[in-house]
Every structure is written in C-alpha cells, then in structure tokens.
Length: 459
Image 1 (cartoon, rainbow, N blue to C red):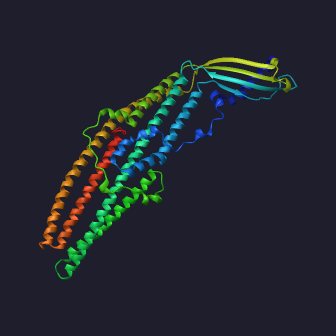
Image 2 (cartoon, rainbow, N blue to C red):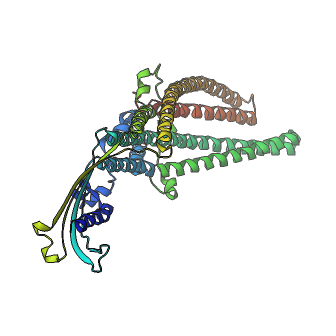
Image 3 (tube, rainbow, N blue to C red):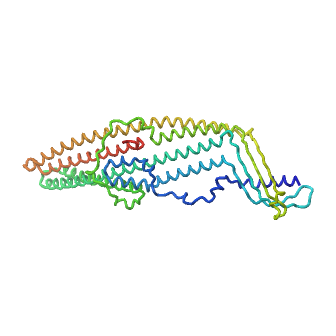
C-alpha cells in the first residue's frame, strides 16, 4: 500500500506539473477588459513631452491645432504608447518567477503493480505548490532588468512625441514656404511670358534677334517647369502633414495654414546650456541601457550558483469517489532540492561572455550618444545663426533691389528705359524675394531642429 501511494504521488506530480499557475494569475484571472484598451485621450505628461508653450511662441493657431492632432492621432505615437504596456506586462511576467506557483486539478489514476493481475484505480484531487527560493536574488535581478526595459520604453515614447511634433512643425513651415514660392513663381511666369511676347513682336520688325526670342521662350518654359516642381513638392508636403496628424492624404488639399506674411520670425539664442544634453531622450535611454546591461551581467554570473526549489503537494484521493476527501485518504508531500549544473555544454559561460560584451557595447553607445548630442545641438545652433545672418543679408539686398526697381519705374515713366527693361528688372526683384522667403522660413525650420536637438527643453 505504501508503494502504491508513493507511485500515485509521482504520477500526480507529473500530471499537475504541467498546469502550474502563478499566484498573481489566479488572483487576476478575471482582469477587466478595459485595461486592454488604449484610450485616445492624451495624458498631461505626454503633452509635457513636447513643451507646448514653446510652440505657442510662433503665434500660429493652425500650427498649434496640428500639433495637438498629431499627439492625439499619430499612429507611430500610439505604437510607442502600446510598447510601454508591452514591456510593463513583460516585467510582470518576470516578477511572477519570484513568487510561488500553485496548481490544482483532477487526476484519475489507474495503477497495476508488478506481479499482480488486478488493477487499482484512484480518484485524486491534487493541490501543488512550487517555489524557487531566490536566496541569491537571481530572479530579482531579472525583474530589475525587465523593469529597465519598461523605463526605456517610456523614454522612447517621449522621443517619439518630440520627433513627431518636430516633423509636423517642419512640414508645416515648408508648406507655407511652398505657398509663397508658388505665388512668386506665377508672377515670374507672367513676366517671362510678357517678355517673350514683346520680343516676338520686336523680332517681327527686326529689333530683336531670333536667338534672343528663343532664349526668352526657353526662360518662360523653364519657369513653368519650376512651378510644376514647386506644386509637386507642396502636394507631397501636404500629404505628409495629413499622415502625421492621423488624417487621410485624400483630404490634404483642405489643410489650412497661415500666410507667409503672418509667420513669426524666431529669436536666435546666443548659446545653449550644456546641462540640456543630459535631458535628451537618447542620452537618458543610453544611461538606462548601461544599467540594464550591468544587471544582466550580474544575473549571468548568478546562473553558476545552485538552484533551490521547494515543493509541496496535498492530494485528496481514494479508490472510491465518495471517500476521496476523507482525512485518512490525504496524501501529503513536502520536499526541497538544491541542484547545480555540472555540465551545460558551455551555455552559461557563453551567456556570461555575451552579457559582458553587451555591457561594453552599451558603454560605447553611451559615449557615442554623448558626443552625438553635443554635435547635434552645436550643428543646429550654428545652422540657425548662419541662416539668420543669410536672411538678414539677403533682406538688405532685396531692399536695395526694391529701391533700384523704384528708380527703374521712375525712369520708365520718364521714357528713359523700355517696358521690356522694366520687366526684366522686376523679374530680378521677384527672384530675390524668393530667396528671402526661403531664408526666413529656413530659420523657423532650423529653430525646430534646435528644439528637437535639445530634447524639447529649449526655452
């Protein structure tokens, strides 16, 4: 009878071992389904990611509304937010390895002993508890490592919000630039057409060579081609903006924006504090990666230590179902084991070397991230300063060109120059205006680049 109970205990262990569930899983087996739904509302901390007061300095309600739509509807941002929950659940799964697991079930068993012809049946209701005693904190380290992944995912979410907001702002100002350039290009086409027609008339009476007429026609056709390129670029930009704010590109033509004349001219900062670099998302993520790699390396060393397991089993069982729960038919088992791998094919050694290698990679990436952050901030600031100087210089040239055109208009009124000469000088004025428009909005785009390089911490 003792052999039968011992054998029944082993059979019960083998059956119930396949159905172990951690205690948290038992306690939360009926978790609310709404935890699986990611709400479309934006949290305050996500709004803080993008430093909205900075965007408001542009005094552009259209831009502010597009930034708001993007942080609410952009699909890349939703993926970044979902990824946080993904790593949160992975951390909980690892945490479950630190807790006991409990399984219960129903295990009917048939038993035939050697040398006997009869078969004995048993109705068993086992309850089993298993716990790995984490006295070396190996599982605790693995949980800490999983938590670092979760923390890194939150920082990457912040980086995604800053990136999308920057893309919206840059695209928006490029659209405004394209609007103004298209308007000016149409004026240039109008003038070139008129120049071509005047030269054609002059050619008929022998005042202009055919070669000059051909060059005027070529300039007219070239201006039309430039207009097509600008319109194509604007359409592409509008489609990009629509996708960034979570709308269909089919409706991109209806996207509203401010006019060039209403755009805000940014103020160029003299310098950027070096402390801002420490707050960049990629810098913070690199720090966390080092911390995680250090924890993983420590956990790999602890894999060489023994594994200590505690097992408890209580089983109600008997040959008759109506007597299975009698106290006399209870089978109890309590055991402990300390197992040390004597040979694992070099797996643990290779894993330790791998974790050391990953730690060194994380360290080198941290150094590189630090240098890259300094470079990007400096490059962005230099680009902004140089484009600001270029804008102011070309604006002065444009003002001089405008004065010169005024003199030319006066000369034309007095009959000192022809209308053809006046048209050609007006085209020069329009071409200079295009350059000024591009320079001014390039400053805004550079300012957004500086905002992104500083991790949205610019004031």
